[in-house]
Image 1 (spheres, protein in one colour):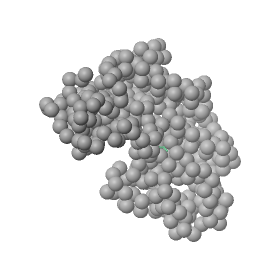
Image 2 (cartoon, rainbow, N blue to C red):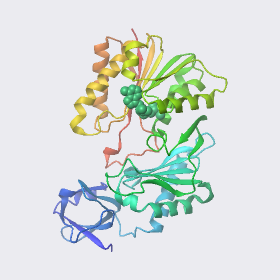
Image 3 (cartoon, rainbow, N blue to C red):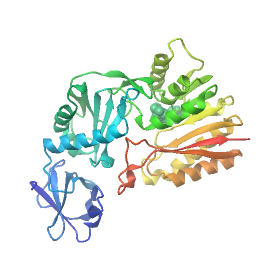
Length: 393
Ligand code: SAH
């Protein structure tokens, strides 16, 4: 039994019986004493039947479920959970000789809501999205060291941007060892990752499979990679033999990362340039010579109430890109806004193609990779979607 328990209103147990990993505050009948945020609580039905255990937090998602059994949330629990996550990744051939960067834990998709752990050649970045996971960071670090033994080089907690403002004063910092960057291999492409100063956990691992697909089409082509961050798509195009690779990002820091990674893969230089510029501005003034354009913007909508504005943004962006691409060329276009679902995104791109007056066919439907699994009862975990379009006249 946990020290704290919360009782659900009658009928509110059904979502848990379906293994949904969240309990909203409106479902709670009573929570007894004042519960400290981040505590493990027992969740019980109105008739006192035990339902699950999870992390308590004030706010709309009140409990994030860790177990549907009466398991203790102790060292053994974390060890078991990470062994399970690692076993699933091994089935995905992660890591392998060519791939030593992957997401080891993806929150709800790994039944560990609120927790993300990325693996960069033995350097682990732990990102807490809930107070419970943040409070458990030392236990998490201990368990990771036990499971991966000397494969673990460092463990860095990077939760500064993912926890409620004002909570915790040590949200970014080392839990084990202290290195700031490393060079990893993704499908044989080299990248320097800096998890301390980089965006998110340091790298957009979620585009791995989609970058690999770009390689297939890049040989001899002129490629433009917009919203390039650290040059993920650019490096793949380069290594696949593209004739020219240009990269655009509004952040000068991101462009510096792209320059570093392009040099890492092409020591003698390459055909192409990097531009620290706004993509909309760049596409307005340039872009007639490209065979392939990649458009991978940040989430335009983080909430439902700004979805409409985001859709207008996606439409404008895709229309601009579609107008520029050479006849017979291709567009790789993405949205990582969770609230813009697959159908809405496709409809938006369709509207953009009509507006641009181009002949467009869908060649591939893209999504996040297997190391970002989606819990079937938690479709909110699906966020990345993309289309590969063949652009005719
Ligand atoms: N495709 C990248 C990830 C893109 S993340 C990869 O594979 O790693 C989104 C990037 O868009 C960030 O680097 C951010 O700096 C950049 N960005 C945001 N708004 C922008 C804009 N208006 N113009 C250009 N870049 C922008």
